[in-house]
Length: 473
Image (tube, rainbow, N blue to C red):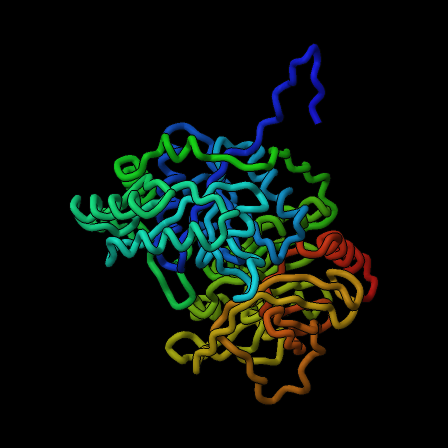
């Protein structure tokens, strides 16, 4: 609250300048537009930061390449409301502009009955104006119907502007502008032509990751050129706003333990916010490569994240010394936490995309099958089945699953390890056991956001320190 002095009110604290970049479906060009805007504004000298609505690791990787800073996760289902605002506030602490890329369609989230987890919900909670990306490749007047529907579906969402994507020639653009001007209140601020099309490489679970580098070295310069000639950058920047004041994130203290982080082309899916939480709790993050290094560095625990081990299965198998070192690390009773791709690496064998099997670390008595493909995708709530590294039995965390592989028992082994979690699909209420707990190894298909459970990062570090001291799990 500001207090008037001699009848004059002091200026209000500055709020973060931000724009949400959304669409009404997947694959309409949200990532391309976000990257183009980020590259163009950065070329103009602005400090640009990005964030992503929803559970995603691939788009944030490209955001980081475009801005030179980590991209944050703004998920209104996984994160408590206060933490959602705090995460955004800290994202904007050193930024002139924050670009928030939406997920799926603007109003799509957890299910079909509510706005939970949607880009629209995040935009309303944070006071973000929305730039709506419309794929106009096969439309003229119907594009106006699409935008009009978005305007009326939830008037509390501030549709501030439209970016037309995949347009044809000048006549097509003029027709589109005329149609939207006649029917809609939302102005058009740009039109990206098919000739400007810059397609990011894709594979079976989405885009090829930025770390793999399978894109032109001048990609971001070309994207900046597209934005400069196709978008009214001054008008878009003038719209940028939010209802959140920036907040400087706390500085991690002195580390109390070392955490080996698998980080290469095969393992790269981590929430930046989870890693920051672990650092604040006392973990020194030490990257290493299961593809290239002979084994983990001198650390107290391992974190094997998600990625594409099935794409690199042959190279992972060929690095026998690393596989054996990880197996010995786990069998020595030192903490190992693995998510999705990390779980696959801990298996006895992994099937690649051509149907060939490759030896993995052999920590868990399972084989990973890629065929027949079984897409598993969705938000997940997990409850610890027993005392574990994230807290006592009953501790609840939130995350998601996204994989095409499945597990089968490895022949010739005894019973499977105990289940790690009781997992729930929040859209159906269905529950089942999931994951493995074997000694101090915890492995699951779930990608957990540690921010969903206050104290989880601190509990993990405490468990690692207990293991170093020789205390039982």
